[in-house]
Image 1 (tube, rainbow, N blue to C red):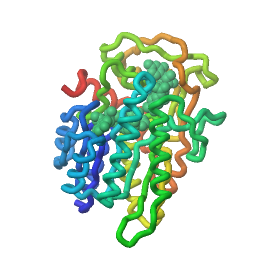
Image 2 (cartoon, protein in one colour):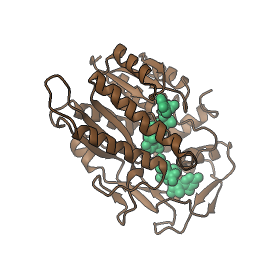
Image 3 (spheres, rainbow, N blue to C red):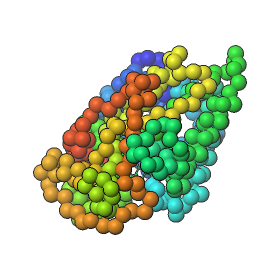
Image 4 (cartoon, rainbow, N blue to C red):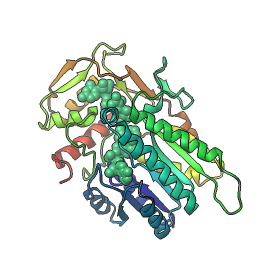
Length: 349
Ligand code: NAD
Ligand code: UD1
């Protein structure tokens, strides 16, 4: 036990549950706040089973100021990792108010409660989706922002709010300074190697990896490959896939950085969390076929609106300042996805 407490919003979800494992294994006390709108408490039962350690769970909405205030008073966290949010791009276009209310207003309430409790170290789940289209497919943190859908804009707005908040910080003998890491994830996939926790999407998945996994296991009949006429090496879209366990380790390193002298008081800094190389849709299908021995039934379909041809991270800043880089391979990502999928064909039940 390192005597530090981390409050994890959205900790029952896909990435949050993996983060809880790493935090518990690193000796942190973990407090999860999740309204279970897109997760099941079983994920946290399994986190405790994997680690042999317990955590505190509060079923609460981050927009509920009174509930959050009481949780902060009871648990006295040192740091917050803020995963709670809605994340489906298509749904965000249909229900923008829901997305802005949940993600943006939710973050406002959270930071108000943090200010009042003088808890001002925050690691935020941002996304590569905040970047605008660029002629260079490898994104550095200083690229212009320009999200193209309400989900992405909700992340960009939150980044703006957090930058404003840290800029407004006054040096005070009684108050801690804000220290904020904005982690811009590229494409998280994979699952914990135990196969006990993983991604459990509601309904038909929007993202490539869970879709491929459900075709492989026979839940879905055919994958649509959205476009084979992009200016890429095989015509299909290229993305920077990152193993979820590598991704959450970046959060542990971010907490260490926030606690160090290197991270200036009042700083709010963005870091890309990606591998720095991309795979095409066809390369993902091939990797899946190789690992599972199954044939993935697919057809070429029209491009999906809003998709880029190619997008991958320049992760140099995270290496330099967070001492972080990916360790796992595409084979690991596919093997662990398949292990989770075959052990839990219906997800958490
Ligand atoms: P997820 O849906 O599995 O987890 C989010 C969790 O937040 C869920 O458990 C949900 O119940 C909870 N939640 C949502 N709104 C809440 C609220 N108002 N109050 C309390 N709890 C709430 O999603 P994930 O894939 O684990 O993503 C975690 C974070 O990372 C999200 O903020 C997401 O936008 C961001 N992100 C995800 C990806 C990805 O590909 N998965 C990529 C980039 C960024
Ligand atoms: C999507 C979201 C992005 C979010 C990211 C999180 C969109 C437009 N973007 O990004 O905001 O941050 O997920 O991981 O939804 N593909 C297929 N068939 C499918 C699904 C996907 O061919 O059924 C292709 C896509 O065209 C893309 C690649 O697979 O080239 C990856 O798609 P996906 O997993 O949805 O991720 P992103 O589009 O990068």
